[in-house]
Each structure stands twice: as C-alpha cells, then as structure tokens.
Image (cartoon, rainbow, N blue to C red; front, top):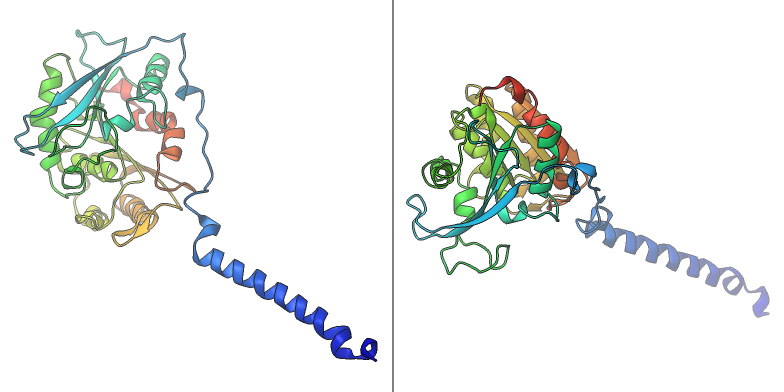
Length: 317
C-alpha cells in the first residue's frame, strides 16, 4: 500500500522542490549581501582606443627621471618625479604645463594612462598644445625606494593629497616647478596649466586649482577622494557658497567605487558634479561602472584631454 500513500507519492517530491527553492534563495541572498551582483572585482572593462597606442608616424617626446629631497613645505620627505618634454618643444615658445600626482601611474607607455603615448598623439593632431608633463610621486619619510610604484606606500601621501589647504600648491609653485623651469620654458598663463590625479591625487588636483586659480585652471580628477579622509567632503558646500572661480573641471568615477568609513566615492563625486553645476562651472562628469582603479579613466583619457584643452589655440603662451 506504500504506492498509494499520498505522503510517499507527493510528500518527497514537494519536499525536494522546497529544498531546491530554499537553497537557491539562500545563495541569492548571500550573494546580494556580499555585493557580488556589483562586485568591484568584475565591473565592465573599458578598452583603450588608438590614441593610447604607440604611433611610429608621430614625433615622440622624451622622458627624464629626477629626485627631490630638499622640501621646505614637507620637510624630511623625498620623492621621485619625471618630466615629459614633447618633440615639438621649442624654447622660443613657452610650453603648456600639466602636473600629475602619483606620477609613476602615468609615466609609462603601458598601463592605464600612458601619458607619453597619448601626449605624442594628441599634440601631433593639434588636439592639445605642446605640453610639458611633470609626474610627481608623493613624499617618503623613510628611505626612498629604488623603484617607483606603490610598494612600499609613500608615508606622506595622505598628508599631501587629502589635506584641504594650499600647502601642496605651495610645494609645486615654490619647489618642483622652479626646478623644472631651470631647464624648460613654461607658460605663466593659468589657462594653459592643468593638473591631474587619481583617488587622493584627484582631490589634490582639484585643491591646487581651487586654492591657486591664478596658477592652474584646468583639473582632471579620476575616482577622486572627495570624502572625509581629511575634510575633503566639504568641497561641494564650499563650491556652492564661494564666488565662482575661473577653473574648468573634468570628473570621472564609477558606480562600483569605494564605500567605507570615510564615505561613498560615487556619491561624493556626484555631489561634486551637482555643486559645480549649481555654481555654474565649466565642468564635465563621466560616470561609469568601474571600481577604484584607473581602467575607465585611462580608457577615456584622450577624450578627457580633448575636452579639457578645448579652445587652447585662443590662448597666449
């Protein structure tokens, strides 16, 4: 009579189906709670375009390496920096300037940003002026590593980049740039002087132009740390309540960027964009799906530079 027992005929299949549903629901719930549906490990990968590839048909600039270990603004620090000089540079005409924080992330011909390659291509096309790039690393208070990079971490990075003050601008204007200008002629026109960075380097770039628009008026910030590390979350309110400054700002971030005790990076960048819009600034905000890395910013880097440098031919070096 077992074959006619409804508990045998229907109970076990129903129980088995219920267990399958419960397992699937549990997995999906755990997956969502861990953020796997928007995992920072697997957002969309952005691809580089032809302007980020080496073109043998265009003139190639020169990259030189330097060390700075005599800082008055940040005493006890030392750092490496590199200088890119385009092939078209002629001392008879002052060159435009672009400064990069975390310079080692920009100076290579591979990787995300490829400054020498992109500059070679865009300068040859006339999409940006003849521009000298100064790519500076943060300061070390310990022994200077033999190789540039993230290991070991530079101890003075946050103090220099995340602090909301004019100190880093002072460091550039009184220490690094005068050293570079001993060899190269650089324009004093702030509309032909740009500054760029990623993460804390991005908020640093904005801070330099914010505090010294008489010297820098073009900002390119990737995944900028406009959060409460050292008070950077106050910038949107400052933008809204301060008389408009003559600066142009490009922001990039992604929906999978950081969310931690300092704040939410995507939200912070959206707040910056809305504040710039409210205050009537010349700005652009590109928001993608990326996480806290240089993939998205690097892929759009040539177009970001085109937007940032538009109208450059109307400026006097």
